[in-house]
Length: 256
Image (cartoon, rainbow, N blue to C red; front, side, top):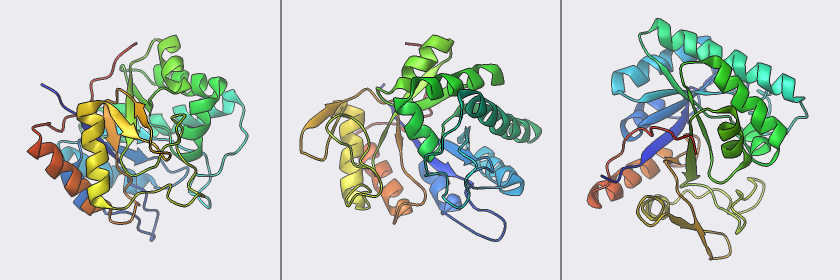
């Protein structure tokens, strides 16, 4: 039976600062990408979010990013492949330990923000991330942008990967995401996001900024927890998938 995973970035609160609506979003997703303290989140929030996932039956993933809390990890910073490898391994290991201590399992890793975008187009950064995931052990899945260099790096490293598409982000005709600095890059209309999701799940395509179609084979659809109206978007997506008989289930990953 055709199914699709819905993933969301979570656990991005920090100390007294609260971000996102994790308790409400958890009802509408099947995989969570939990911030690991570098771009957002902290150890207390990590543990709280792991417990939230376990209570809801949602797959647990690490969401490592650049050490850039001020920029929320969305600023591209020049790091060597060794530095990227080490920071991904460090953050992944921390969340894996917390998940294990609560009786859970770390299922996947999804890089955050600028790290994600850099690895999508930089083969050395992509391979550094893939190798960190491989060394983290337990056959962890790398969640990455469809058609990006991260997929190739995962294959080279011999790890499982899953491809994702974005319901709430606009694409250029070349398959790259429109930069957040540009108008219209983030889509906050629930109905539009829902229509884009069903197109991804059933038709294996999505419309780009110039009106052309991009063909993709996505295992997962991402809804950003900090997008305006994120809960309404996630609810609309679940409703349209249900009406069309498409179950929401965690991805299983593949090797090629």
